[in-house]
Image (cartoon, rainbow, N blue to C red; front, side, top):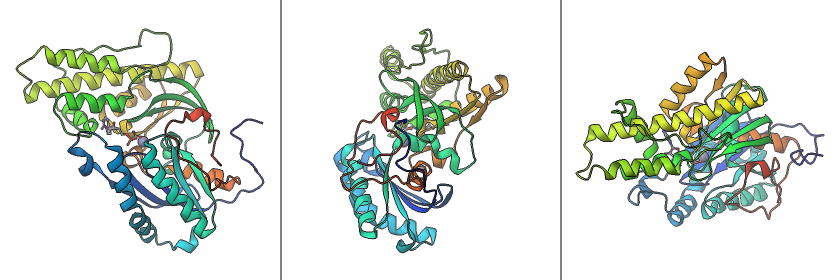
Length: 355
Ligand code: KG4
Ligand code: ZN
């Protein structure tokens, strides 16, 4: 029996679920019906808290999650027009992410499910991102998933919920991490990705060409650390510092290099797997250059490319309910010793986690 198969496939009862996400710097709570219909999807961002430090401070993130989670859940229920007693299941991000931050969500979810005597499942954060699209339109399996966020730049073949095969991944930084680090080098505030995107959109590359690492390698892996160093080297050549127009040009050249590498490797993976359907998901999937490039490819290569809307690309809780509802409906049940896991390869997540 493949490891992703649920404990029991006898039941098929979809449900009204509370979903919780606290893996990084956003506390998120959602109420979702049948893993399809979003009744509420609230996000309490911590950007203000971490901005002064130029990045996420794990200890501060945990503390803020703890302060915010209870009122946020109350608000999510109110917005959804749902009473606590109507909830039939709880879904929570089990990992990967900051362990202290994850623990807040996992502990809260366990207590909540126990108090209400309703079932609980833990879901992989990236599984949530990849399946978020199903909340907006039904995308058939199999498809190629490009999971691109602050912690991941991974290519998966997806044959169904819980059925993921890793095809390629970054060997160092994730694309989002590289966006944020380059932004920092340029003196732009945290989180840098959206700002680099905005500046890039209003500029050309000024003739700057950054390397496209791993493109010549005959595999489906990525590397972004070299690209980041290339940006640093470029900046060091201009000791007087860059003016606004030059900063925007660096943003444009860097973004173009990332988009180039990601789109070309995704195309290669799709060809190798004989897939013409693609889902691009995760925070960096908000990037306008990436969206434009994949839209062009869908026409030139005859591909079906799906991007969730920006709200569902960024971290949110509703995205977890797609897999969560499925696992719950199939009899998946986490025990009360469910633990958070900071590092957890999706292909080892074995569908849902019960312990
Ligand atoms: O999925 P996400 O919200 O959190 C993680 O799971 O990591 O992704 C956050 C990442 C950050 O690195 C952020 O800078 C990046 O996504 N990001 C973007 C854009 N919007 C968010 N990167 C490039 N362009 C954007 N428009
Ligand atoms: Zn994420």
